[in-house]
Length: 228
Image 1 (tube, rainbow, N blue to C red):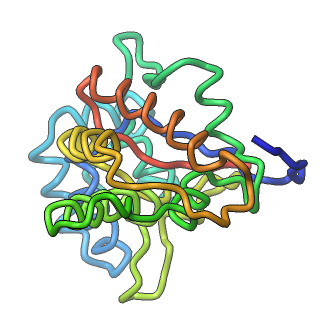
Image 2 (image 1 turned 180 degrees about the vertical axis):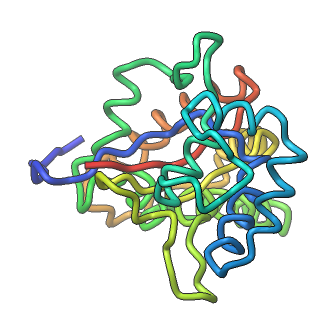
């Protein structure tokens, strides 16, 4: 692939092992609490003992009281949903080299998924309705992973403005990971003929597929996160 230099300020992107089944409830509760309605947050903590214990282990003495938590929304979502090892460390997916190649892609702002979404196309050899439906479902999965934490209706990206430059862009549940991995392996897609980096889409596909397989083996969801 024909690489070009990236600015040293480009963000680094990671696919983190993430509880994508818990994430919607956490996001909804945070949204409500930001509007001075802490009831959903309190109910969430009362009904999720594992989440309550995790926040306590991270130094939050009264996790049911939203206003007592001093973290920004991105940090709170990440801490609530990141999958941990038995010794309490974030669970890493895939090989180090794969994560690094995915992490800072040599184009634009360094986002491999943004490049993929811009330059992926339906495979013209698959022309039936089932093939198009599979491609559309795959694109929806990639969009959810890339932008699922944005709220276009409310006009904000509340989970993409974390302190220290941390941004959580989107996520997938365990089932979503499995589905996207299968759809991606179907080859219902191809690269656009005019993509700017020769082999760029294929390169992203290789690393993304490896990370999806790693998440599927671990039976976890994933989140797209960036930080500077």
